Length: 211
Image (cartoon, rainbow, N blue to C red; front, side, top):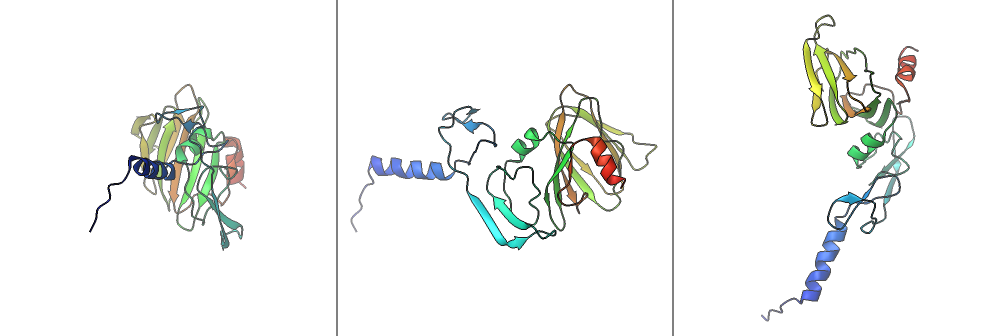
């Protein structure tokens, strides 16, 4: 069998195709595009179009049509629960300016993003029937936890390296001790808030919860 050595031109063409297939998609709402050296900046040379995959037959629990774009776009502040969804969670968390927004609410899990203003806190909370995972994206603060509201003696300083795991039945409070908003995302299992929740401020959240 005769072996034909591939040409340099064909090898470069294949490498380019493989590389382009792995370049993430970006649009005007999804933050800076990567530059040729791999860093992020204002260059949009490597941009490829975002694709929108629609699952018309898939409906969420409220009857809305499911939609699953493969990058952040106009749906970055909408609850796309019960539809497959892959997106830039760091970008969505960093760009969020609401106190709390539900991005994805499923049957057994919910993802929310939060922005806690300087000098404010979530206030003491406790969820009897759900576990919670929190990831700090930016800012600094402190978490306080305990089995008793009067004895929340587990206290840990927070920054962007930290995640928090909160078992069901644990009192907890997250306090912004920094000079910029404390931005985080939170995963509840099962869900902790109604589908499509958007609380622009902590006051809005308290009013909704006390209805």
